[in-house]
Amino acid sequence: MTPLRIALLQGPPGAPADNAAGAAALRGTIARAAAAGARLLVTPELSLTGYALGDTVRERAETADGPGAAAVARAAADHGIAVVHGFPELDPATGAVHNSVQLTGADGRVSATYRKTHLYGDFERGAFTPGEKLVVQAVLDGLTVGLLVCYDVEFPEAVRAHALAGTDLLLVPTALMRPYEVVARALVPTRAWENQLWVAYANRCGAEGELEFTGLSALAAPDGTVPARAGTGTELLLGTVDRALQAASREENPYLADRRPALYPPPQHGG
Image: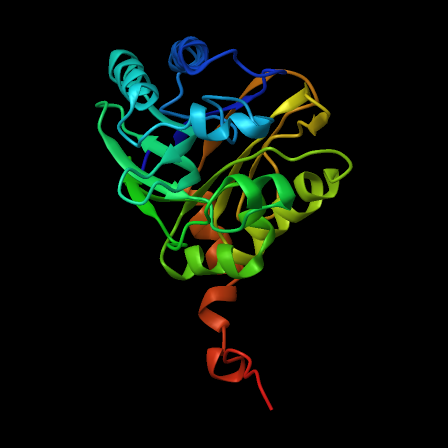
């Protein structure tokens, strides 16, 4: 199969003044990524709105088919590139707001929407309702891609669930803050290695409110290497997902095949 050219947006610093401005910024990045030859663009967590929303989360929230999603769909179709963007999602049925990411195909059709299942810190737990479906997948250019958001990837169970479900490329929009650079530098490549899949980790950078993001976005490979790594500033990081490398790595390191799940059942609680 042909390798997949992928772009990861790191940044930009700060937050858009409103969702329309966020959508316009995404459209510009989509055009740049397509011009660079990418077939897929992954943008950071809450890329439509910015992360440090304070008490404005609900007023910035949109439905999964709202104006932000429509703007991304138009741009994806216009430029022939798949796009992952993050947004606060309003569920019209329940009134709940989720920290969500959406994969839109190069034809402008939504392929998957994932609601962050592991919420980080007081802000997220107060502003969002956690999702209840861990493994959300779609097929892109013959690859099975999966979605997680930031803190999710720090749980080994979450990434292993994707590996067991057949995910080849795990897309992780992120808002990793200082001083947790160890997550980007060490943990993300480890997750790729131990699960024999690709991990695309697209982070924010710079300051937003009182928060400072680490940058260090990365494309981590199943062999434990990091073929593409950003610095700490705004960057459109480009990399290639090589299917042949994944196949060779799985043959060399058969972790998934050598598992003995009967020896590690779920722990029993209670007396």
